[in-house]
Amino acid sequence: MAKIGVIGSGSWGIALAALLYNNGHQVTVWSALPEEIVEMRNTHRHHTLPDLVLPEDMVFTENLEETMADKDLLVMAVPSVYVRPTAARMKEFCRYGQVIVNVAKGIEESTLMTLSQLLEEELPMADIAVLSGPSHAEEVSRGLPTTCVAGANTKKTAEYVQSIFMSKVFRVYTSPDVLGIELGGALKNVIALAAGMADGLGYGDNTKAALITRGIAEIARLGTAMGGKFQTFNGLSGIGDLIVTCASMHSRNRRAGILIGKGYTMEEATKEVQMVVEGIYSAKAAFALSKEHGISMPIVEQVNAILFDNKPVSEAVMELMLRDKTIESSDLPWDL
Image (cartoon, rainbow, N blue to C red):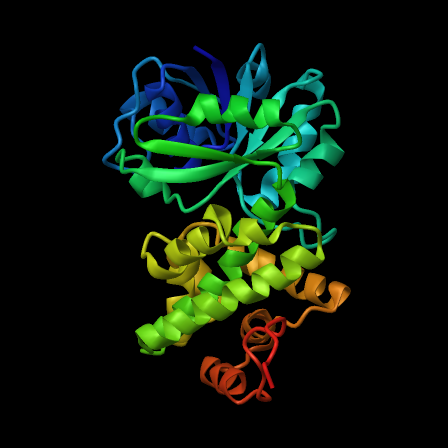
């Protein structure tokens, strides 16, 4: 049995807290929102996962020191925009070698850092790992079979994380490509916004397949240029996560995209979804990274124009369809 602190009580943090408890671990959950702590203590439920009954002996607290003290592993489950300020608060309680598993997905807009890079900067004494893949909280909380990948700088840490999370319904693979895992997880949210916009316009399966296929091509081009491994983008945190996020109504990014496709503004769509839409925060960062590395990302470019320049969605689609003719895979040679 491990002692685990889950930092963040959104749907993903709570789903993982329940999974870890069912794996036989002792779990403490921290939230910055007092009303969530009161809700979970009193009802043993969370409003975003109403069918999940939380164990009587799971601990819920606003005390960050209590959550971190004497823990074998910490799960960082706050939305990406809150990772840096939360990490700054954690610093005084973080011991040397503390294993912290980041499960949020995003890129910091101001620095263009991945979240593990950000955590390493704020908490240099810690051993930072990541967990990512096609894994909606709603399905994990119901015990539906799910697979993810754990990435870390050392094989030992990755395998430790694997052993903590692995269960008969939650299979975990390991990988040394932390950067690739994080880029896949963050950038797919931007493509999922585009997929939702297409749905909102009433487009069909052909359009969705095109966005997924060309979307992973964009992600892999940028990811490999930044040092990620091509195999990673063909795996769980690449094409796997992209498929589920573009196709499922559990996806807040797809839902926000649908609303924008129907004519909602970005602000109206975010308010309607009532959760953090990570793709909106990652879109500017993805576009900035594409410029920095000289990578063509036409879908990401058009999503930015829609979100931040009020470009009509139908006009953006037309521009994507009428771009200059090109080859699908530039590294495939012709015989003649």
